[in-house]
Image 1 (cartoon, rainbow over the protein chains, first blue to last red):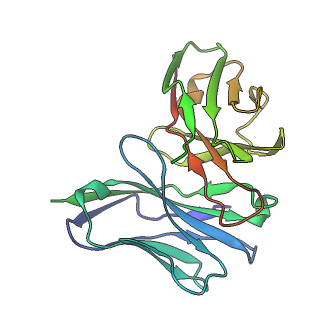
Image 2: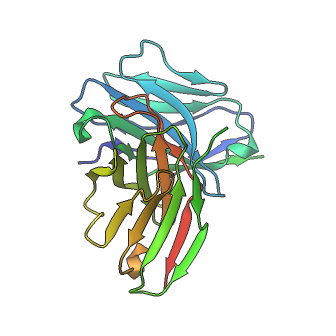
Length: 117
Length: 116
């Protein structure tokens, strides 16, 4: 069963606008962690933001925030004031205990974001 | 800032040949991983490694794959007899401690493997 679902293969956003990248997840474990990674065209995987299942507040890191809706099992990434350098592939990922002791991080299929000048 | 290093950045090999992909995880990290990404697609888990043994592996990680930590600093992925479909970007990753949901993965810059 697909554990992480990213339904937007590609997104466009105008420079300086905000954009939301969708992510839904599925787990039966009450304890889990959600991550977003950015992969620019150069290929490296860059950690952006983390949200724990027990965190009371939505995570924020600079221009990145995570819209965490636990009951809906969604963890959408919001990028405010988009910049040209935000053009990249974005992956949502989850670590839960169902894989055996929180060892494995499972990734979604990614969303390719293009920022338009 | 400490980083995970991978060598080589690109590897070209003939089908049926053995390849070894090398990684140096961050020095105080205890958990090591290999992931692969076929061009532009999903990042797929291959294997996790802790305390000198495989802790979990995916269905992709069949008998042609093996991992090793030969000398306390390097972490290697060996593909015994490469197939065309093994062509992908292979990422090594490490994390500090096992068993915690907030342990993020630190990724290397990847090795692009091309099997001809």
